[in-house]
Image (cartoon, rainbow, N blue to C red; front, side, top):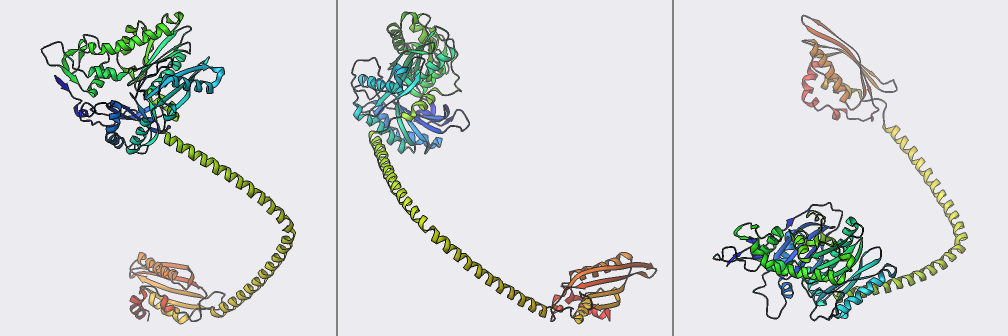
Length: 603
């Protein structure tokens, strides 16, 4: 026998695969699907799958005698799920745990009290006039009659899944408290935020019911009846609708896992002398999704000695079981007028398995649906079904009791707060009445305080005015009317270029502002040099701190063979300076360097 491993995936390793990028208009959620020997993590946004990853757990060597495959999967799922959460960077996301294969699939019409059931789901319909509340109650009663689980020790929920023109359809589901608690612990250990758990039967039933009514409403024609079968991992649901009305709903305890398990058995090729080929579960699942239900002559990629005829004997028993369930349901559950022209449509996760719809319709004696299958890139059906019932996901009974305790405590605190608020309001009213009697006295007291404050402000203003007058007198006595003219001459001697000779230096202290009148000549080699000498003198005067305004009144340049000569007249107006100003400290930075030479030249 030749085993065909799943390459690197056979080592229980898988990488997260991004599928669809959608806008972030929906909250991201993690969906963990646990089935015997397999864990799958889906990151969803609304009804779209953003990414998925899965791990396969080999239970052949770890399954103790007497234990169930799903229980052993829980025992070994912590590390694989933690790795998936880390790879997908999903830590902290709200998570819904879907458990496939936890127990027998239940039917609302079943009267047998099964033994060992650990989960189940039923659909119950009521007339629309009875209302949603009656439909929910009826669904819970039907679930109680269909399972031996003790409702007092198992979390259970019921919600209205859909309506048609005549009836309200409610879905009830239940799962053993031990499994719900294990899923919570598993999610928390993996770093996820636990929202709740759902049995696979609930997702399967919800998805089939919603899809059948939705698609029947979109594509129905008068008096046309269509059967919809949703095939999930370990369960299936059959719904039959006509003209937008649900006629029948029934659960079937078989799913895709049975087909995968069939393809995991040894396969003998056309040459019986060759060794048998055996796929592991991951490889068998890929083969089912890629090849589906092949024709007898179809080749199998990668295995030249295998054809569809090698696979069909393995798949036929499972397909026949599903077809028998469909045939019996149609035969005993539908009236004669609805059987004529009945077509079959496969919806849900199995809708993309090639030729599955065609083969099941042929084995069931029905015609396959002519409507094209939903695109694999569109909204994910399981994500839509899980999103619909996620608010009703199951939580451990201890968590429910804690939630009820918190709500009771919050209600008690709210009542206490309301009583205290009433007492406070009464006290406030009494205080307000007391304040009304004191209002007149407070008004008189306010008037007296206002007059007292105005008097204090007047006295403060008088003191400020007196201080201002004193300051003005001090400033007038400190500020002089003219600069120290000797210091002015010293500064001129230090900051005048050698090419400039003064013909007139006139100091005027009689005007309102002290002024200095300078007249002279500048002699140099050319016109540009003369202009530069006069401009340099003007720049130094304008940068001189005591100078308030510097005005060039006249300037003329004459040239001859010996050079150029320019005459100029400059008027400098000074700011008011202190009587004892140290003008020598305000000299230009170059004054101390050039002062001796320039003074000698000016002499």
